Length: 525
Image 1 (cartoon, helix red, strand yellow):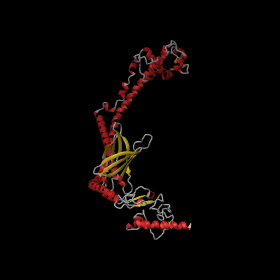
Image 2: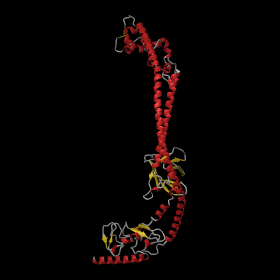
Image 3: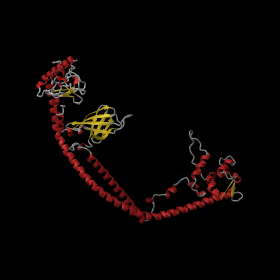
Image 4: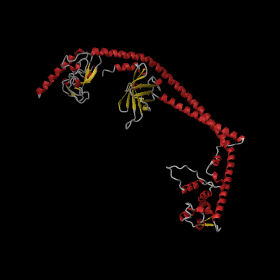
């Protein structure tokens, strides 16, 4: 055991010396696979403490190809720890962190080849070439941002101007609303006053009409009673004031089915469970059932003759009789019977007030009240329209158009993108839709939701949610990735997941030089 431990310490010392020899070309000596920013955590003059703080080991155990720390921090330069991190210096290009499990696996992960140090010559150092290519792309991107930033500054100026104008318009709308409310209230008071005068004048006509209606009703009632009493007297053969079953058996009109006799079922129909009826019961109960039959017998009511059709059943006499009973409620003497099926007279009695003939003074009051009602309706509509505009301006002023209002002028601007099957439309800050080229309805892919970019770059991603529900699935949603471009346009639309759409948008509003600088300096971790 003592011998094994001594051998491990000797191997560790050899690896550490080898490691520092390899790293001697840098200004700060550090173990292989460690970045400059973490070099101070690996001091050869003292024991090494694992990054997670769980243990402290002799410094000679660092990069000894044995995993001592749970977090793998003691083996940055070997593949001993599955969760370790190897730092590629990549001089001339971007530094890079790779999993330490890739160290000495025969694959060149670092452009400088330092991850395959166990087999020198396996990997060529191509960092200078990659760096030159990356710098050229970076310069193109910088030039694009520089050109786009000029347009962006114009958008910012227009956006702030638009916001100021909206604020002023909102103030004006608030004033307009207050004035419109005053006018509406005035119109409402005027309408109430004129309607009171109108109702007072019309009440005279209504009272006269009511009296006329009552007079007609009384005449009708009297006619009904006269007609019923005459028929009762005709049926009451012994004139004793009571109509018996024996007396109706000899009257053809009570023979509903026209079989030559009045049977018990027909007696029950007209008398119910009574053996006889007096004048009062006859008028209220029996006469309304008898009258239609009497009209048919006398030929005073002739049902419309329908053309015979093979597929239509014949009308049963009892059903026709019942229909006559249902419609014969209005009464009147026999001479007026043929006018009963039409309700023209009743319709004339409920004629609209505007079409009636009034005296000049009453008609003037009606016209003034009608005009007052129209003006109030217009005033109420004006208030509603102003309130709707106020809500729209308030919502727009509450929208987040970027730190400097650079996206404000894009609100409502619609951009389209076509693929083989669909036409996609993005209306910024409003909605996303999809329509088949073969026709059909538009499908909503989401309504404006929020900015959803990562921390520090919030305005790089838009999120549109609550679109039309998929068949047996969730509601559709769209993610819009925003990049710098000299014009606002959609460059691609994909559906990486069911009912989730990914849209690429370029716009000068995203050409922020400061963001470009931050991204360029974000590579070294």
